[in-house]
Amino acid sequence: MKITEEQKALLSLIANSLFGVKAEIPCNTDFNRLLTESKQQAVTALALKNVSMPENVKDANTVFKNITVNSRVFADHTLLNNIMTKANIPYTVLKGAASAYYYPDPIFRAMGDVDFLVKKEDIEKATEVLKQNGFKPWEEEHICHIVFRKGKIHLEMHFEPAGVPNGKAGEIIREYISDMIETSSPVKSDICTFVNPDKFHHGLIMLLHMQHHLLSEGIGLRHLCDWAVFVNSFKGNEFETLFKERLKNVGLWTFAKTISLAASIGIGLPKQEFMGGNTELACSTLNDIISGGNFGSKDKDRSGEGFFISNRGKDGVNHSRPVQFILSVNQIVYTNWKVTKKAKILLPIGWAFWGIRRFIRVLTGKRRHMNFKKLYNSSKSRKELYKQLHLFETEC
Image (cartoon, rainbow, N blue to C red; front, side, top):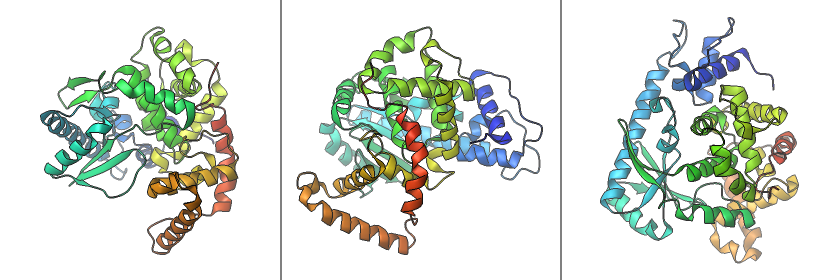
């Protein structure tokens, strides 16, 4: 993919906001397209905070709107902290305020839902406490969290972080995160009060989350920014000392190096020795991140391609695409009809039921039509790229 002038400008503006790199905006930059790109990457407030937009730019007050939303979501974090603390339920935040914590100006980090982790034995108690505080659970099965809503507030209560794979790597990762809540610490700032994971756990959670979405719909530049400011908080060989051996044990070290080098090339993260020199892979990964946008906002076919690439990382990326499609649909059935996990003879019924259900939803406009032949063909190049990341493969 060829980087456009507007994308070059956006990358430069991000580098300026995060790392003080002098911004260079090409003279022929179309500011309307720049604004659109920033929205698709979920970095508008961050990138454009120091830019005087021309008068002909539509929706030029987007930065103010973004900050308003961010302020509300930070307040939601504080509300959650008050509820959980009063109920004496241990928890820790996943991403969100925990990611913003590492930004030079946290208020400019685009905020979304409030994700948090509780111990499995506290799920029932936490559910009741949230209900008592006016939150209603969203009755839809998910593999690792329960959604609660109250007005504009959207909470995701995790009983496991997103992106934990099957197999040996998943077992080791679960061991890594077994003390995550205990090693977290409270943070009180001018904009938010929350419980923050320690550095190892926060880094691991981000890597799991990024690959989880990268292999499906895409992550966009917001996630790259989150990772970049986190890496920049380490000095000397601190990052390598903390992460290298443990990430190699679960097949995430190559990914960590690649995504870090991509951030160095694209958005000005100061280069560190651990990043290595595979610039070709890093540039390809950066292009893939940009082309997808935040959660696939630029290419709605990407999530469909994900069926042929990986089951959001659960099964790695080394299965053939036809086999991977079967595994991906199986996971949908397992998630929504748990009995099939033990009684796999029922899987064909699950395939038929969920296939018909999706067909009806397409007819009623609730789901997009999928051209599976097209998705199969277009998934090939992405799958070949991701194979080079060696996700969840034991690394020597």
